[in-house]
Amino acid sequence: MANLNTVRNEITSGAFDERLARLYGADTEKARARFLHITHLFEEKFGEKEDIRFFSAPGRTEVCGNHTDHNHGQVLAAAINLDAVACAVKTDDHFIRVYSENYPGDIVDINILEPQMKEVEKSASLVRGVAARFKELGYNIGGIDCVTVNNVLKGSGMSSSASFEVLVGTMLNYLYNDGKISPVEIAQIAQFAENKFFGKPCGLMDQMACSVGSFVQIDFCDPANPVITPVEFDFASCGHSLCIVDTRADHADLTDDYAAIRREMEAVAGYFGKSCLREITEADVLANVAGIKEKLGERPLLRAIHFFEDNKRVEKEAEALRNGDFDTFKAMTIASGYSSYMYNQNVFSSSTPLSQPVSLALAISEVILKGKGAWRVHGGGFAGTIQAFVPNELLNEYKESLEAVFGEGACYVLAIRPFGGTEV
Image (tube, rainbow, N blue to C red; front, side, top):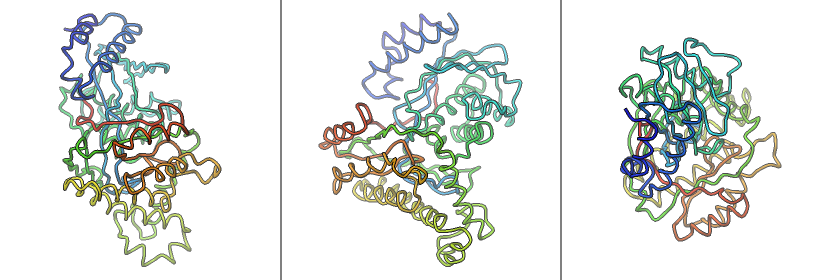
């Protein structure tokens, strides 16, 4: 069984390089340094241990289908090469101890598997929620000592919380269940933890993209059995880079803005006696605009129209990628962004109209990329990040222009990761 010194020697000698390259690309020097760093953090917290193991769960980028998943729609998403990593060992007690760099540790007693009010919106609730769902489904759980390092930017639209949930599920899967639980089920378990224990009514897209990996088209018509279709596309050959721009805006007090999108979409479905928009058609809505407007107002109608139109775009974008038609893909990306801005209205919060950093980032992107690249709001919106597909010949100009406004390091140039949650 490997102890810390043995593991460090193997990392330094390059014995892990092939595995690291699969996750992070050919330049493994930075990855080596990161994994060595986490072993030292582990030793500071837990001392010398045997049978050291490493786990990773990526962040994700939403490619199309903005706020469609929670109403059983379709999304196109991809895993990225930023991730949450854990150095972990099994223990013979009933505690999961998680220490994250620069954050206080969580010590969770997994004999207690009910939601705890004091843990709402805290990371401990996610650990407890994942363990609880494992137990409910008849899977094994047990003690873990671990240290995590997460370079998925919090509040970035790259799903740092989903990557953490998937990481916890991945550890329990490999440490106690021989890795037999599918990535799809790990994603569902992670969503359960966030909905029922953390207290956020999220859809399943974030967790699914983080857990499954690569480009995926996901149809949530039946959320208990989502249809997952890999999308084969060699992104490296398209002459563009994927950029995520962090506008460094504060996400505080935006929970109701996010929740209102789902609530209003479901209210339109409720007009027809249904629970979600996927159970009705766009034609149903357009034939009843006057009645819905009178009962619910205009914004729920606009958000419903966005849902139906973005669902169509998911299919068109996925097909364009499969056909190698990147120009059509970019056109659909821009259209999705405009729809999010005008109809879904999640680019800035109506409660703080003078604060519009995402709008500004989109405007600058359009000036630089119009006719050449693509741009759109990324993730939940209101604050946070935008996504851009930038021709490589414009990459330096684009990065410099956005960072001149939002600060050095605000523009992330990313790769698509072929693996989801995994043991390293």
